[in-house]
Amino acid sequence: MTAYKAFSRLALPLVLAALACNFPLTPLPRPGHSGLIEARLAIKPRPHLPLAERPGLKPIGPALEDLPRLSPLAELDLEFGPPGPSPRDEDRPALSGRPQSLDSEHFRIHYTTSGADAVSGKDGDQNGHPDYVEHVARALEYVWQAEIEIFGWPAPPPDGTLGGDERVDVYLVNILTDEEIAGYADGGYRDTFVGDNPNTPVVESRSHHAFMALDNDYREIGGSPAYALDFMRSTAAHEFMHVIQYGIDGGEPADWLWEATATWIQDEVYNDVNDANEVLTAPFKAPDSCQLEYGGEARVEDLDNWYGEWLFLRYISEHYGHATVRAIWEAAASLDGYAAIQHALGLAGTTLEELFSEYTLAVLTRDFEEGEDYPVVRLEGKASLDAVFNPLDGVGQMGADYIELPVEGTLTITLLGGLPGQVVGIRGDEVHVFQLEAGRVAVEGSAFEKLYLIVLNPQTAGRERECAFSGYSVEVQRGGQPSTADSVRGRGHFRPPRVEGLLDPDG
Image 1 (cartoon, rainbow, N blue to C red):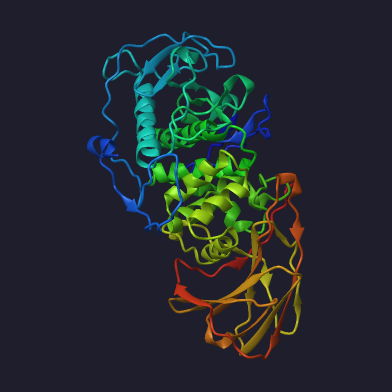
Image 2: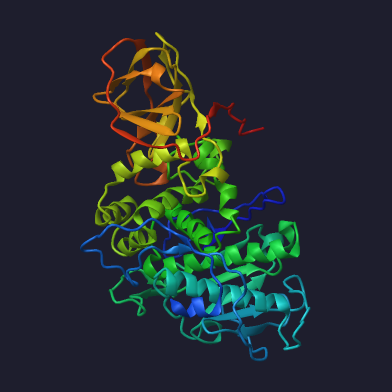
């Protein structure tokens, strides 16, 4: 089961509990969470950077270029028939009251108007369906059109007659109060195994069907009724991506990739809601954590790291196109974890190591399309002349440390310990990047307003329990033959970072 945590910009985040697993045949719950649409819904496009030509890329869905982020201005105009039956299936949620259903083109929504799971009975159009259920249906059909028809992800496999027919089943239950999660998608069991998804032109071997659960009202989130609906819509986009992921590879072991992708897509589909920004603390305040770390267990700063890693996918989509993120999951049908990412990046004309180096620079300068709204990265510390700088704890796999350097004359920076690094000089609107060679580089420090060393750990862990920190030390000395910058680029949304004290995980 993939579950999506609740994050609210209007209330303190709920403290949520969940168990992780690696999708065995009987898994424990794990944490989570075309022209047709243009004709029916007003869209405010946010175009991505163009994709380069990528010979050999054969995506599951259409090869779509220059895809927008979407910000719907109105709900889809759908018509609904009277309430229908909601059969009780084993291993599906049991509603607290008499179950009813609303059918849209692709979804059957199961709800009740009595008991703990009751939705509000308000029915403005007097059609027998509560208004909230209709809002859910319109959101889900919009999400289907956005993720499948516009963004080209594959439709999930049907579940036979479970829930009554082959449509994707969505259950409205009181999970925010009872389970303290905003929504979940459930699959990955022996009974949900499909093997090959009939909705794709390729042959998969690990496809599963799945169902979704959303909260019955989202009132626990706080804020206005309008915000509760926006939160529901964003959660629907997140959970439906999990249903799609199950349909591609219900056995993918990279837990962080499930949650990072689903959090990334909710911001692509509902760009103006921005709930995904609530989990950006981890990549900015604990940038040296291992990418696979669930977060919040040993360090408070990397709480919700699996979700916060959506920023890594945002960097990929902004520079190599939305379809490259989709290509990662297409590759996941036969490859696992970083092997799938490396395959997709190879098709995009880059490598994981090259991309990671560029990504860490973007984190420092907040060089993302919406970077002005993101946190400022945390400094590991400030190095001094003629002294050895040692970090508090080193750098985890696919993590980075940021160290401020003095800007006094010509400097030789030496990085000891075998990790790669890059020096970044900020001057006016320019960012100058110097790559370390054999752990060393000389820079004219006085030419810059600010100077930083980024220490990178491009190693990849196979699984979360293999995560470890690599140590290093830094020496800064006067003198040397200044190097010419390897690249010069724009300033992005840079603001000077600062050293921040670590929080007590037991406090």
